[in-house]
Length: 112
Length: 112
Image 1 (tube, rainbow over the protein chains, first blue to last red):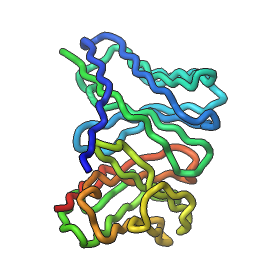
Image 2 (cartoon, chains in turn cyan, purple):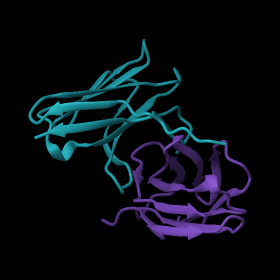
Image 3 (cartoon, rainbow over the protein chains, first blue to last red):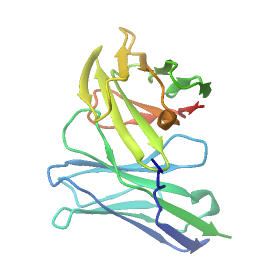
């Protein structure tokens, strides 16, 4: 049958602005969450992760926030640069070994 | 250190044929997971191997199979290829399958 492509949410920001990408996860039993960045023609690249015993974790220019009450995850990118343009995926793991469940992704576009 | 290596990078096959894809994990990693990425369905988990045993399996038909060797290298096989199997196939490795998943660049399979 006809396949319908996923219509990715898009976020367009100016270079230097902060970006916030949101993700709603599905399983309240999930205890490990990861953000990945995927550029065209490449595999997903690890950005930052967080376990369910934390609600915030910071990396270099990135911060992940976890709200278990509403099953929501967000990725904040400070001082967004053109090189940050990519599709961003959140992924969850509920203690099932190497099985990650991915969100649909958000396309980030950074205008110089 | 070397990352996750997937071969081949590109592959064109005819309907009805079978195909074998290879994944070499990061040295020391014992967990290898496979994913299918399509515009219509996004990133979907196929299966995970840990110490030569399949530990987790996604919702794909039996035409999709895999194995892992004693050196942790993994292969996946798709038999009786269908047009809908055209996708980017990604593998990810992890030390124990409890975090730190690193992806390869994928194999782009086109079925004609």
